[in-house]
Length: 93
Image (cartoon, rainbow, N blue to C red; front, side, top):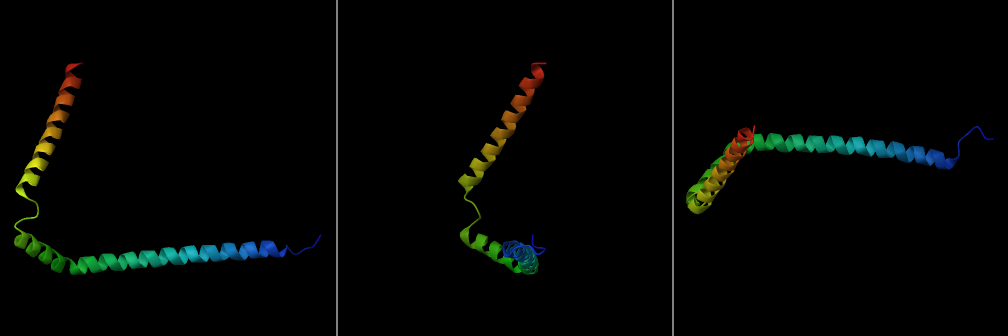
């Protein structure tokens, strides 16, 4: 028996070490890039919001009236059905 491990084990160890190094480098780079994007978004938020408001004013509103009415009706229907469900559950007791 040889006291040194074979070359395949050394290669596997080197590849595993390279994989760990790549993982930590990639994770760190992604975190750094995400932090820079968040900081950029926070710094540019007033200009972005101003552009959004101006676009909304130019188009006459963000959503048309029928869309807002349908959305309100659906929310009221869900609330009403939830109240009905709770009422029927409590009435069965």
